[in-house]
Image (cartoon, rainbow, N blue to C red; front, side):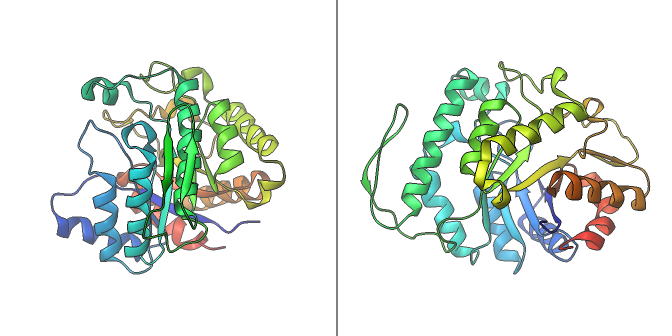
Length: 303
């Protein structure tokens, strides 16, 4: 049974000092992981420089992405940036990847939003390229979307064979890919093919349990090495969803993404999902919930 691990998504700060202060406060609490999302729209810091600053401001806090949109970067560029950040952080990086999905990002940047199957296929190739470039020696890869001809990048990541790889998603194809290739699977609702938001028909506890079963079946012998996690959208009392967020908490009742009740109630709920369903990593989606969730993280982290 994996011990509990807790992370928080941070998106913005008015200055470098304010950002560093946020990272240090998180490090001093029960949270072991600071995560930054990756969108071209909205008031959000860019992930790589934000994580570099957070790593430089802290000593123990792990830093990562939830998640990088694969379509925004060639994997050779990401491999170089990630290896550098892993070195500068002393081996504290976790690389979260997804296909990219938000239609507004693609439309605003003039990027084509390909069908989900194409994006998942491209993500699978990107993971192969990343692992190849992080390994010792030159990387040779030829696929439908990427080609790498003997590239041997330096530096290599501090963490070997590579930084922990997180893949997030909710659709069958991306969950199968995550189960087969990732170290950590972050379970979400399936997103509409047109990128306009989560599929409202994919919510609720039965859909969440079905995703867990799909991961277990696809992982096979790898299952015991996987870390399973999800994002927590509500803590304590139910609140209105933030207008900028694509999350729709009403569709998540009964899942570990909605944690209502007292501190004792929430701790019991987390133990249930960890002990009965192997979900051990919980990522706070909204900074507004940090005061309510921090005592719970401090109580359970590492246990």
